[in-house]
Amino acid sequence: MTVYNKLVRDRIPEVIENTGKQFSTRILNDDEYIIELKKKSFEELNEYVNAENDKDAIEELADLLEIIHALAGYHGASFEEVEKVRQNKAKKRGGFQEKIFLIEVEDE
Image (spheres, rainbow, N blue to C red):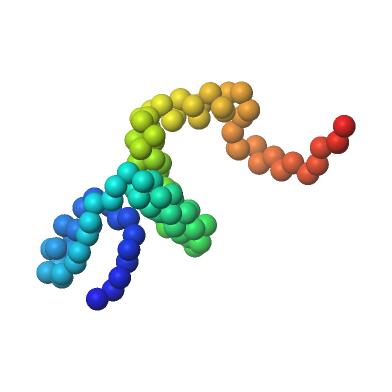
């Protein structure tokens, strides 16, 4: 039996069950859940970084977005609230579309 010990999407047990394979799961407590969500965010980010084409990159971005939705909920916010914060920061400081790479700033 392959051991995974990782957070999975809610319907994965159903998917495995439909294959007829035996498996085991458990429900995480809140402290474990946030730890595993954070681990999963790094896993998905790494998969995005290593994506070799646009199609795979978009798939991994969708997975990251799902993690962001879950993290927002964990912290008591909706995705819409997170998006508002993002928009406000973009108004004040801009986004990343202009590809600006800061080399150095003079010290005082």
